[in-house]
Amino acid sequence: MKKVYNDAIEAVKDIKDGSILMLGGFGLCGIPENCISALVQNGVKNLTCISNNAGVDDFGIGLMLRQKQVKKMISSYVGENAEFERQLLSGELEVELIPQGTLATRCMASGYGLPAIYTPAGVGTEVAEGKELRSFNGKEYLLEYAFDADFAIVKAWKGDDMGNLVYKDTARNFNPLMAMAGKITIAEVEELLPAGALDPNQIHTPGIYVHRIFQGSGYEKRIEQRTVIKK
Image (cartoon, rainbow, N blue to C red; front, side, top):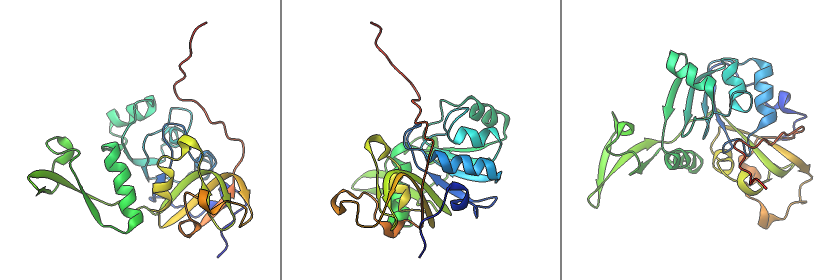
């Protein structure tokens, strides 16, 4: 199976209108910048995006929101994006806000082949409306279904041509969970190495989960909120 692709354009070219996408990252850390830019360039529409957050107005998923490519956003936090807020309030964008732990566990369930999970998060709130409740040992839990994503798009520090991935520091957030969960997983890496070059003990995502991989370029790695000490 050929896994190595030339660039992001080639790797995402078959993502069609109406696709369901998982996009790794936390804030602006560890986001698949090259793939997002390629999706903007391709102009694909009516996407459902599963991501911890929605980027900012001029970066990350915010670029796709600005082009009105996103039909539905499934996230745990969206507070840094004014365009997201505008589309939500105007009814242009469908939004599902869920607890961050539930988001992570629904990704994990997809990767593990589980149809659903039970969680106490959201019980007794609007999150539980219309959902099944079940009691275990006297405590109520909410049924949440595993995600069913067409593509998982992740960003790693290093990878090899077999698809093995190593993440760096905080970029090891939603990326490993999502890499397991897509029907097709696309990984962009800062450094692409030949098979055998990575220490097997340091691999975070085994290549069995990764279908496409390419070496990215031009990473901005923006800091979403900068706090400094005045001297």
